[in-house]
Length: 431
Image 1 (cartoon, rainbow, N blue to C red):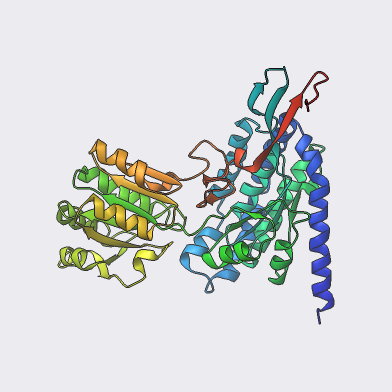
Image 2 (spheres, one colour):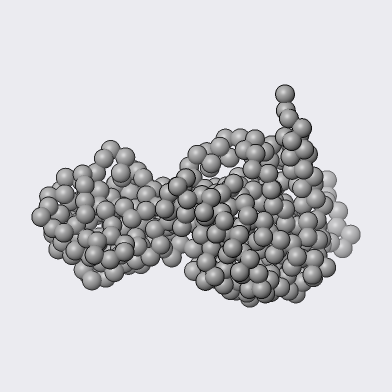
C-alpha cells in the first residue's frame, strides 16, 4: 500500500505537470523580446546569487563524496567560474534568433492557394537527468527560448543545487510577466515518480533523458511520449599513417584531457601501424603522470608491445574496454593495419556520437566524413567540440545519438515542430 507521503508526492508531480501544461501557451505566444529579457534577468540573478549557489552545491558535493566516482563529482560541482559560464551562456542564447514563427518553406498552388510550414513550440518538455546541475539552467533556458514549458527531474545528489537554479529561472519569468510555472522542478527524490512522469503523455510532449545507460534504457523502454535520448558516447579518434604527428598528439590530448567527464571526450584511439611506434612513444611520455592528469591506457597486444619499456601507464585491454565510455583518465588504444580496419572497428563499436580522423590525406578525410555513421564526424579536430554552444546553437538540451527527429546537439530548432498554414481566397476543392 502506498504511503501518505508517496501519495502526496504523486499528486504534487501531477499538479506540476498540469501547471506546466497550463503555462505553455503563454510562453509559446511570448515575443522574442520578452523571452530574451527573461534570459538576461536570469543571467543577472545567477551572478547575484552565485555565492548561495556555490554554497548549496558544496553541500551536495560533500554529501555525494564517497558515493560517486570522481567523474560524477566533477559533473556535480559548481564553482564561481562555472556559475559565471552559465550566466554567459544565457546571454549568448538571447542573441540567437527565435525559431518560433519562422517560415520553413512556402509554396503557391496553380490556383493561388498559399501553403506554408511554420515553426511552433512542442509544448511541454520533460527531462530526467543525473548529477549535472548546470542541466537545470541549460534545459530550462533553451525550453524557454523555444517557447516550451519544462518539467525537470534531476538526481538526488544535486537537489540543493537544482532547487536554487530552478528558482532563478522561475523568478526571471515572473519578473517579466510570464508564468513562473513554465519551469517546474520535481523536488521529490522518490525514484517511483520517474515511472509516473514517463506515463504522463497527456501532459508532456517530449522526454529527454540525460545520464547513464541504465537511465536512458529505462526512459526508452517505459516512456509513453516521444523520447530523444543521448546514448553513451564512445568516441574514437583514428590516427592515420598520413597524420601530422604534432597535430595528432595535440588533438588527442585535448580530446581526452580537456574535460574527461563529458560524453564527447575521447575513449578509443586507433593508430595506423606505420605511425604507431612514434605516436605511442610520444603519447606515453606525455601521459605518463608527472602532472595532475596522467592517463591510463588499456592497450591491445600490438599497442602493448610498443608501449612496453616506455614511461606510459598501461595495462592489457580487457574484453569490454573497446566498448566503454570511460568518463575518466582512461583510454583504450589499438593498432590497426590501415584505414579499412579503423573504419570497420568504428562501425562495430561506435555509439553514433562523435568520431574523428587525423590525416593529411584529403581523400581519406572525405571518405571518413562520408562513411562514418555518427552524429558528429571530424577531420583533424577534437571531438570535444560536439557541443551546442560550440556549434552556434546556444545551450543544448542534449546530444542525440538517434536519427529522429534530432541528431547531435539539440538546439532551439530541434525543440520545435511545425504546422501547416494555408491561406485562400474562397478556395474550394473540386470533386
